Length: 524
Image 1 (cartoon, one colour):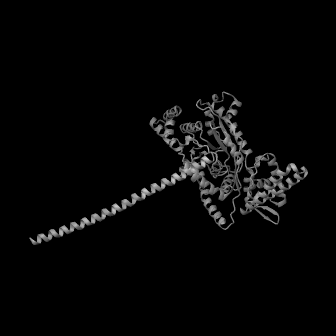
Image 2 (cartoon, one colour):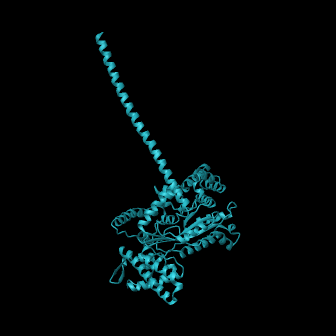
Image 3 (cartoon, helix red, strand yellow):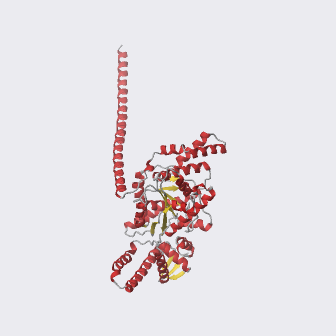
């Protein structure tokens, strides 16, 4: 009996220990769970406050600068998808595709859904006006001295809101996307037509959050192009401001490439849509740099006659910039910390006079849209070439490009500093007389002030004396331009300058040709 009692006692003690262990485990679980829950609550509250504060800041920036916001960008992707899926032309293309490929109609429908998912973006206000603007502002101003075309940018605000606005631009660098968006940040948010090269993580997410839509170049499937066309027409009718690189790809030799007409044709077609009562306005945009970050890669492709196109080639080209930018950024940060910050020259964008699609169509003929596709595209090609001509007219004249043009025209491997300044002065005078926009920055403050002072005093002084002082200031400006450009060219070892003698490095002469070609059309 006594033995049985001791056995029960030991069992009860064991159960008590087990209960204590279970209680401890449960208490630890509750503490951990409570900690996680508290963290998530705090994180949600903090995140909400940060988002709210940043949103207010973004909206204040938009209201302060009276920026045009395209409301359709905020439309749910689900609604856009339904709108496209109900389009009769897309239905017809689906039936034709299913018949041609011998597949079920639901398989063709799934393909259309995939295309829509690939093409359609999701615009995020904070991504564009806070994250995007901060990155663009920091990056561009660390790499370049950015000169903004304020005068013409302000004129863009006068374009009536009921019109569809399309910025058409030349393509010199992958930085173009950032530079143009940065230049227009106080006017409008721009949705780019982006090639398939950007459909890699995280670029795809970033570009889509900026409102950019994706298109496949050299992809001939009719169903895909029907979906793409209908989406572009949908956003055009809804007034979404778009940006198109009219050459379809980066220039390899510095000259303009042949124009591409596909997207322009899609947009022009909205003129025959009875729902659209406005006009399509094309704004020519000229882009230029003193230093294109991927210039060596582009020149190498030009010289070898092997242009890398398509997804792989473009991704490789962009990756080189991604690798190069942090290196340049760190280098400039160290220089900035030691007071020796040196930019990679100037970067600038100029805006031309807006061009009406209606005026062009009316000049051709009223039954423009009833033409056969081949004939209509021929006319659209003329229009695209006219747009490219206007882009060429507003290309910014940067110091390195002007000096490169002077060296290319002189055709000398060895010349004096005075010879170069004289040629630069002549070219600059011609371009000023032709109304070209010459890019000048901080280094030109003294001559800019001199011209301003002379302009104010012009009516109170003798014409001969004013003319003489203008000539002196023009020469000083040409010298400054030569000094600014030669400093950068020497840093890159493209030229050597010693005792007033300038010598071009033979192995890098193609770089001189490349930068000269950006302006060569202005003197031909």
